[in-house]
Length: 140
Image 1 (tube, helix red, strand yellow):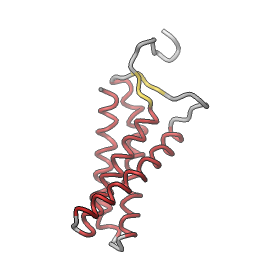
Image 2 (tube, helix red, strand yellow; image 1 turned 60 degrees about the vertical axis):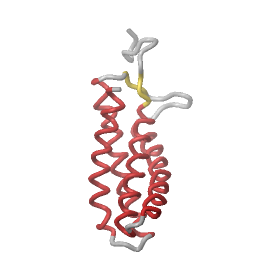
Image 3 (cartoon, one colour; image 1 turned 90 degrees about the vertical axis):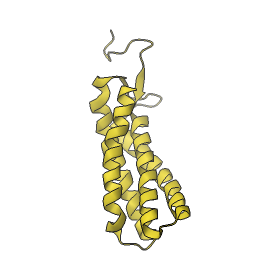
Image 4 (cartoon, one colour; image 1 turned 180 degrees about the horizontal axis):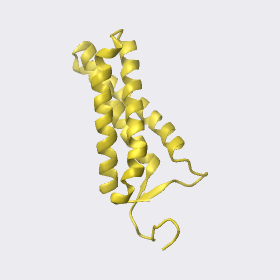
C-alpha cells in the first residue's frame, strides 16, 4: 500500500468536483426557490434556477480550490467509502451553504424582493444539499 492508501484500480472521488457539484445543485435550488417566492411564475423560477446553477458552479469551483488545493495538473482525491465522508462533508457543506445564500440574496436584489423572504428556505435547502450530496459521493 502506498502512502495515500490507494491502490491502482481503486475508485476515488475528486474532492474539488464533489464541492462543485454540491454548490451547483444548491445554486439551482436556491435560484428556483427564491425566484418562485418572488414572482410565483414558473418561467421566472426556471430562469433564476439556471442563473443560480451558473453562479453555484463558479462558487463551487472557487471553494473547491480553497479547501482542497492541488498543484498544477493534480487533484485531491479520496477513496470511495465511509472513510471519505468527513472530507466530502468538509467541502460540500460550506460550498452548498455559500452558494445557496449568495444566489438567494442576488435573486432577491434583482427581483426587488425582501432578502429574508427567500433566504431561510434557500439556506435550509443548502444545508440539506451540503449534507446529502457529499454522502452520495462518498458512498456511491
